[in-house]
Length: 129
Image (cartoon, rainbow, N blue to C red):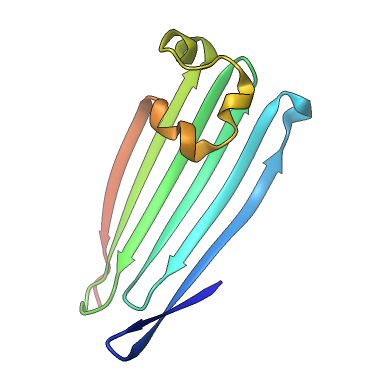
């Protein structure tokens, strides 16, 4: 998808893409979903790779990797990568007052903040010319 903005009599192009790489309903026992979202702007790009697993009545797992690169105005672009692993069992979620019903957990963006972080790493890569 191409989105164009007008900024100070200039046209700025922004490209947005979202692709489902893998999806499975786990024989009606949950959902497994792997998506990638890419945003390309004139001065940088952003990527989100997201793996979502829900095994009904057992656990919810979310793995996200974000990458961001700013290349405008720099001879040495920097790529930042953050990986975040979140996971919880249905019992742990119910103990914290969240619903036990699997239907309440269909959208990873809604439940992601309710899942505890298991692991988080951040890396920085400086590309030298």
